[in-house]
Length: 438
Image (cartoon, rainbow, N blue to C red; front, top):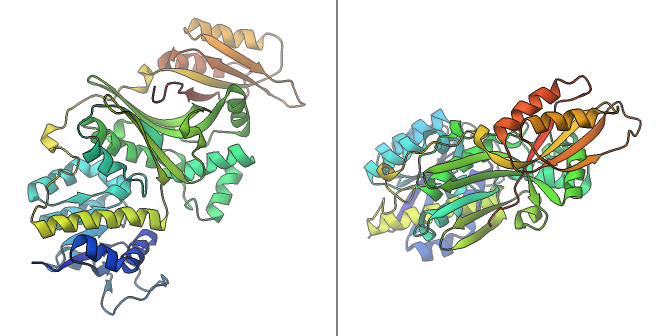
């Protein structure tokens, strides 16, 4: 009987430090639940000198990651280094050496997941990646196992804590995007380079994985339309409130037969919806199933200990499979890669949606008529209009809420409107979702 599961950790940053702390703090409980010791035996990181506020036994920390991957005494490799290609090579080498893998690397899995999951299936090892989506929210295991018997029709949610913090702060406390972002960076809630977070790339990485888990279809990160939140202003926050909405960066996927719609963009969510109340760095994911109906999963989507909790949960599961001699019992996606259905992600141009439109225009008679005329020629019907007084500005906002319209038609109309001499800035577009979970 094996009495110890030995783990090698690659990437000893914030999350890696949290994993070490959690394993130390809950050592006795983990041993009783697993039936064996779970030992963080070796750690690799390019920086072996930084003070992380913890004491490691001599010889545990090294800058030679390959020595962990090739160490026959290690049962599981945890990859927390991030990035695409090097992480992919390390994970594939660990699998080739017969080791199970735990990772939080959604970017690597979104781009190279098919290769990684296929290699794990052939090798008969586990790949745990609960921490890659939603931090401590157990959404991967839920979709892979608990909801495996249902037909999921839609999945949508707030899956990036940085963007949600920025939009929540703008909504609740005021301030424009740039100022709120700087404050988030000062507090350590946003990276020095926030591109992946505020431009929606991180959310699209996560949505790529959620689509495969929820719908059983092949999804490519490159095929998912993505828009970020940099263009959102206090004007938009204010008008959204006036219309009864809150602006959130949503990851949205819907399945209807063999058609799959997937997108990431700022969205106006009805004030009554649960997602509207998800503030700060929290994440929330909703799943719409045929049999279950709506279910909702909420929690901290980032941070040292929430993410470490998901990593350690995967370690315990992989350890149990090793002890029972049943590694690879559940395929990484919950089904064999060979069973994954090929589908085409609907182009954004085919989307049918309601829209919020904001135009900054010169305050002259007839401007509204010209804009509405162009929208009408492109089959876009107006549901409501708000037009502000001049307020001593060079340009004033005209805000329009549309009925359902085709995205392709809208884009054609906006290109024409933006060329008007009376329009002083590029039009702002935010899609409206009134039927989330209905």
